[in-house]
Image (tube, rainbow, N blue to C red; front, side, top):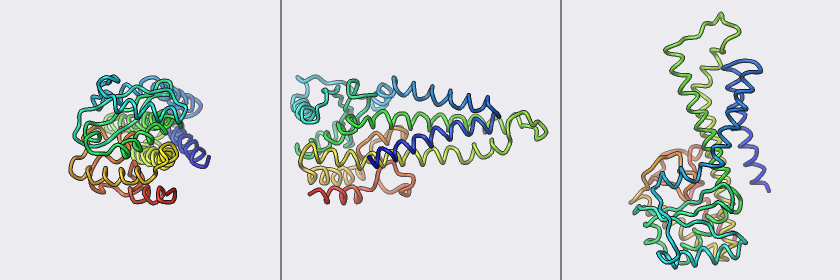
Amino acid sequence: MKNQLRTAALLAALSGILVTISYWIIGGTTGVVVGIALAAVTNLFSWYQSDKIALAAYRAQPVSPREAPGLYQMVQRLCDRAGLPIPKIYIFPSPAANAFATGRDPEHAAVAVSEGILNLLPDDELEAVIGHELTHVANRDTLTQAVAATIAGAIGFLAQTLSYGMWYSPYSRDDRNGPNPLGILLTVILAPIAATIIQLAISRTREFAADAGSARLTGNPRALASALQRLESAAQQAPLHGNPAFEPLLITNAFSGQLFSNLFSSHPSTEARVAALRKLF
């Protein structure tokens, strides 16, 4: 419940940034209405299209029970325990070891794993990873993360557009009815940073909950702890190349090394996640 409340608060803050910058830029009631409309449109877009975009980004291909019988049996067993419908299962072509779940609800979900993770992990650790992803599905984190990413992207796009406007169509300070120059400046500089921080905070919050959910589903928190350590080590040798915007969907950071501080990381540190799982041993 604590994580859910925190996630709701962070999503509200993200939408609030979008509405606020529209208010400051456009001004008055019109700005508020435009901001609310943008938030509604981006949420609606995420609801229906996020899964298709994520799967296409990693060139994931659907597989049948005949093509991947062991993987299907594993997913079915965990879904039976969780009381979930069986999601569509995809494999994406990459030597990097990673996995993600997507979809707007459990009835329209998909779980995708890389060729690399199938080759790297033993069955118990792979099962723990699948349990993590299915917990994301059960908690509807897949939609939450997609909405957060889409709103953050809309804020970034708006800020980028405004930055061009500042250079090529400077606003007059005497135009009190027009856009607010200070609001534009703050939007261009601060809004994308704030949106990114909030989006990544949402992702980190949901990862801890999904780890705990996997431990409950499999009854084997040690397996997930071992898998996370193995995946981190593998990422140093074979990072997953792709659009960083989709990194919050993955089970671990896609890139090797500590490129950013914790504030700008899409996942909690592996050490913190393993420490939390050890409390469940």
